[in-house]
Amino acid sequence: MHSSVCLALIHNNNQFRNDYIRPKIEDLTRNMDSHVLVKRIEVSYQSEIVPHSFFTAFMRDVIYQNLGCKWRRYRLLKSRKFRSAVNFFRASFVKYILNRNGAAIRWKRYSAIEVAVTDKHIRAWSHFLDSDSDYLIVFEDDVVFKDDSAFRLNELLNTLSKNYPNKACYADLGGGCKLADLMIDRLETSQDESYRYYKKPVTNTACAYLMSRELVAVFIATLTRRPWLRLVGVDWLMNSLFILCGERVLDSICMHADPTIFKHGTTTGEYVSWQAEVPN
Image: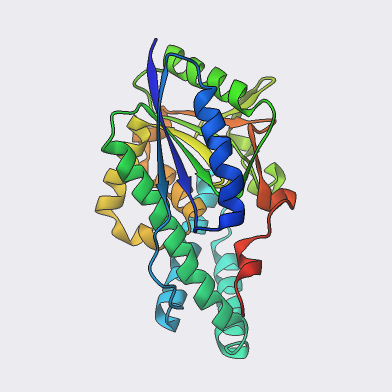
């Protein structure tokens, strides 16, 4: 069975990172099974980063606070609205009033960068939908390849195209956060030697992930109706879309590679987080 995949690289024109990742993606392309058609795209352009205003940065905090409550319910965790609200206002007072010349300034810049990164992922999704590819695999530029990455990715594509054609599919390929920190164990349905499976779609980080055309189409349709979601960091955005898409994605296939197919270089220490690279 023939399938086609679009490999998308999200980057910021960092030559050191690109000198590593581009040859790796070229090797991956050459090592894909003969029946898999591969297209490659890069998304890098961003306008000059201008720190967000107090209003924009604070409104993003409010959005995160609201989504955080929904995220707890989605994961079948006990609601803590009152405690969460108290902590939110306390943290906001400390950040924007007491530390307005320190933490607030840094967050306004981080806030603008997060939105720029999210925009790149959304552009990659839209570009993919304009192609005729079946699956989209997105790499951020801090992804690190393993010796068996190509082999395992071929296995995954063969499994999806054979067993789940025309079905919304999501696969987390690079991990990042510890499972204990994600607190998604109540959603896990099974585990084999390569993957954990979840009854509701969830993501870990956006370092490396796969989505089927059906899922990307639902994501873009939801973003069109809720454009304010574009203000959310991409990791939060994807989980928020899973929540808001409701029944349209509840029947989807959600897999998290364990062990991961790729490494998240920032969390493994092989790359420095962009937050640490941004001057105060």
